Length: 208
Image 1: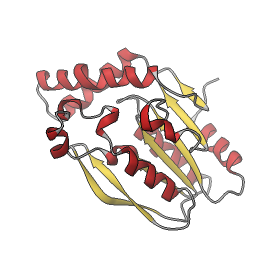
Image 2: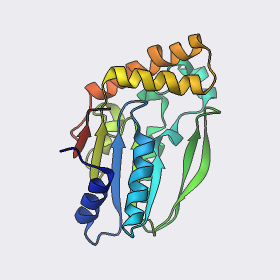
Image 3: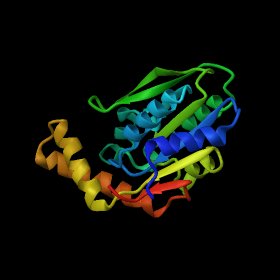
């Protein structure tokens, strides 16, 4: 039986008990539907009378100017193009629920992160963290092991990811050549890397 969003919300509430702060990770390749699921889970938790906030990992993209200097702009989105240390610091600051934490949010239309764009309040009991590398087993990302109280992996088939990614980049009015480079030379290789080097999740969705 496939779990619904409402099933997940009910399960995490049961697991949380009377804890003050509960961290949920939603990981997966580009185009897997992480941000959509995060928003839906947040809504389902609020419908149960809980408080919830979404913390997106994309806000920790390294600035384009630095990526240009490093020759990495064309591969923006690979593990090395994120401020992992800054992300870990924010997660550790959020964990105790003892202060407001302002987190950055990524504006995909402008391809840049906006600093301090979303507040995480001590009153938010459930924090839904979504991003590509939350369950990645390599490099500094491995330091996230054991940090989350509940984890979800989205792993749709590669052909489904490819279709979604083409739709995403065409939606930003890129030419077919530009969209093709984004999809075939960056996002899909990143997706295969993520799927091939992931830690076990509490729940894994493998269909579209």
